[in-house]
Amino acid sequence: MKEKRDLKIQAIENGTVIDHIKAGQALNVLRILRISSTFRTTVSFVMNALGARGKKDVVKIEGKELSIEELNRIALISPNATINIIRDFEVVQKNNVVLPSYVEGVMRCINANCISNSSEPIKSKFSVLQSEEEGVILRCLYCEHLISENIAENLL
Amino acid sequence: MKDFSRKEIDYILDIAEKLEPVARGDERSRLLDGKIIALLFFEPSTRTRLSFEVAAQRLGGQVLNLGSVEASSVMKGENLADTIRVISNYADLIVMRHPLDGSARMATEFASVPVINGGDGSLHHPTQTFLDLYTIRRESHLEGLKIAMAGDLKYGRTVHSLCHALSLYGAEMTFVSPPELRMPQEIVKDLQKNNISIRETDSLEEIIGDVEVLYMTRVQRERFPDPEEYEKVKNRLKVTGDLLINADPNLKILHPLPRVNEISPEVDSTPYACYFQQAFYGVPTRMALLSLAMGVIE
Image 1 (tube, rainbow over the protein chains, first blue to last red):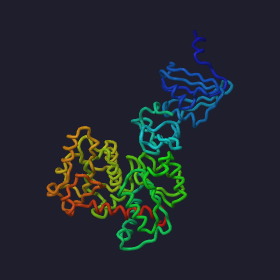
Image 2 (image 1 turned 120 degrees about the horizontal axis):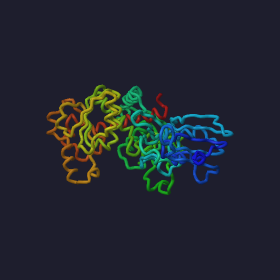
Image 3 (image 1 turned 120 degrees about the vertical axis):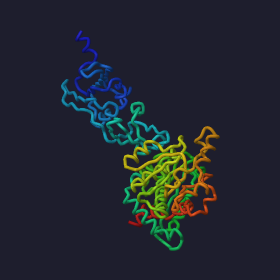
Image 4 (image 1 turned 135 degrees about the vertical axis):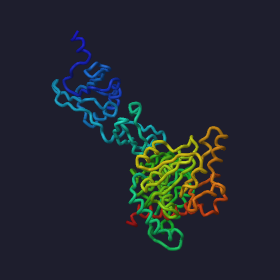
């Protein structure tokens, strides 16, 4: 029985494991990391896995160590996720994601009249704020609109 | 407007005051001699465009006008970024109005010359706020002002920027509007956080005796799906001679113009009427902003 459970997601030799992702957000984590069908190495993920602190998602990316800057974007949708860098089946580095103070080209502004939603040659730009009441808030650096809800839905 | 501190606003208004005799044509100035100011107005505008044009010319500068959008490269599908890059090579400063929010900020990324925002989208019109502040300072006072703003407070970008700027001077604010056009609650909350006293009502009669400045705005017909409702609101928020019987003798009435019928013509000849003077004050204010942006005044 235990062997079968272990098969759900195998240990990886080298790469990045993103653990403690908010349940149901694994696909959005792949989006935020720009992992799509053109990605070359093996990517596996589990949704709604039972962990010590309830349900969580896990993403494993083999043969690739993603940059801290890329990984920290995950904090926008799952602030408690952890990053494990694996080499020779060993965890050589373990960090919590840190909310970046600025993100560029990651999501679209929800204001339809914002210049960043036009055909101009620019990327969307947001400063990232954290409030105790509302959690993560993004402020568009072009039109100043605040976004505190549906962040995952507006990922590019 | 939020980029400016009270000290910086005061400094800009001081320069506007020094340049006022030039704006009136009583004195000559060559501050912008040899400079070319490009006016890129992608949306119709009368007062803003003309007052920038006058401001530049009174200071000895030359004006380059984009002309109508229909006759420009924009109609051929050129993006704003390219237009800005090209005009940067022709002019020493760009004044721009554009229908998209944040367009002025984007323009600064592509321009190699200073850009002044002459209104972008529905959010910002900072030079209007500067001229409103200048008018209040010249005709009344900024510190601890008792002001009422009336009309369309929900969509009116001029009142949003103005109440933020006035909060730096500790104003007492009254918002007069029909319930469907109330000041957005996030702005009210922001002001209250800064200890600004706020009162909200839908009646001008109730407040006319208590305020030193009444800032009127136009209620637009298209905001009301029901034409009858529009007629009712329009008539309730109207400044007439009768309303002003109970006004503070020092009351000043401002309006960003154009007005439609929210101020009766009979008010124009009273000492309360300040809106045409306000339109003139756009010239010295914009002269100050042009001079500072060009670096000809430190």
